[in-house]
Image (cartoon, rainbow, N blue to C red):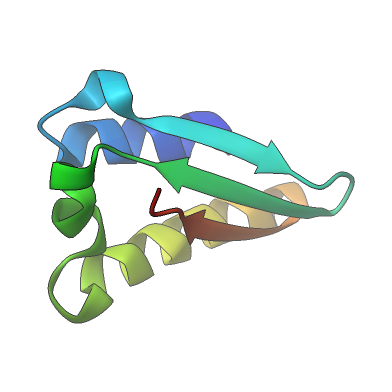
Length: 77
């Protein structure tokens, strides 16, 4: 799931080298923290949070097939 989130985020931003994903939690309850460059934050969140919502939907759908509960947090540093 981490690789899927990295792939999606890197294709949305202008600075893909600054995209990082950190896994927090273990077992069947996992949180993925997405960090991007400050100037790319708007591209990942989108207007009214639409892109962020769709990213979460895709990752959650993939995780459900694997039998894991996942949440995606977009971290602003």
